[in-house]
Amino acid sequence: MAGADTIEIPRVKLGKQGLEVSTLGFGCMGLTGIYNEPVPEEVGVSIIKYAFEKGITFFDTSDIYGPHTNEVLVGKALKELPRDKIQVATKFGIAKIELNDVVVKGTPEYVRSCCEASLQRLGVEYIDLYYQHRIDTSVPIEDTMGELKNLVKEGKVKYIGLSEASADTIRRAHAVHPITALQIEWSLWTREIEEEIIPLCRGLGIGIVPYSPLGLGFFGGRAVVESLPANSYLEYHPRFQGENLERNNIYAAIEKLAGMHGCTPAQLALAWILHQGDDVVPIPGTTKFKNLDSNIDSLKVKLSKDDLREISEVIPMNEVAGDRVFGALIPYSWKFADTPAKHSQIPT
Image (cartoon, rainbow, N blue to C red):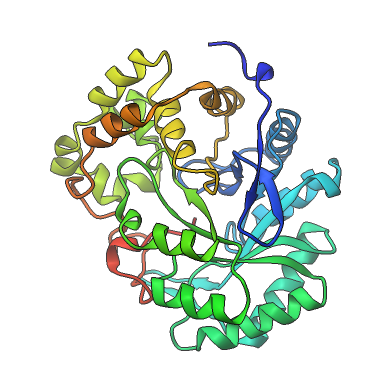
């Protein structure tokens, strides 16, 4: 396939409130380490700038990544980019990560303090898209949304989003103030949201921002499938362990289909997500320039309805072995009360 520099990344409307973003975003989390070692700051800044030069304008971070260091890194990159051409998404709501649990907060006071701190770390006057990262079920969502609505009125936040929220929470939140986007895990091997969440969002005019669209790197190549990266938290993930990984012997089938379409398995998996609708904006992350180019090249892959059905049938929705929640042995696991356990995940 031709190089990524031959691609013009389209722009799409995310939600119905006016936010326009590149149809492919960039998840910045990995630049400061989660699944891998963090990259040097100058490399992280260079990757963000390179992504912008290639046409990506939608960058995703959170106050819990690092914590805080990811927002600082993104802020340093923003100083070298035109702010009016960038859409910055960040998140609040995870107050603390402890050994076997995560402290989630959504009080109005906490919302405001987090927003002020993120603005300072990012070095910006407003946040384009501000997500509630996880839902604090001890606080009525109406109270949390009320403060977010105030931040919109004050110009500190342009648009409001939710992450990993249940259908009931989405409805109630949207009744207080329009939700622009829902960030949630969606990939070829994580598709439970197609039954209820996706139709609900589309009925309400809420855009969908899939994280981990490459299945936590599962579709990234045989190197990940056959030998996990050193010191990676993926070794604790149920889907990458023992019998589950053996039962999830779907990579070869995807590799074969990718060959038929003249692309890599990762590009096929990402193209599949990109073909789910104009309201879908995935945010794959990477620490390598070549992988970023490869992700952008996925936009060249054209899939028909028959192709999409064939790809989907390779991985039946309910036949992937292992939950998508991490076990209790690592610091990033928690019991996630707002949605079923199958919708739990480390910070993303």
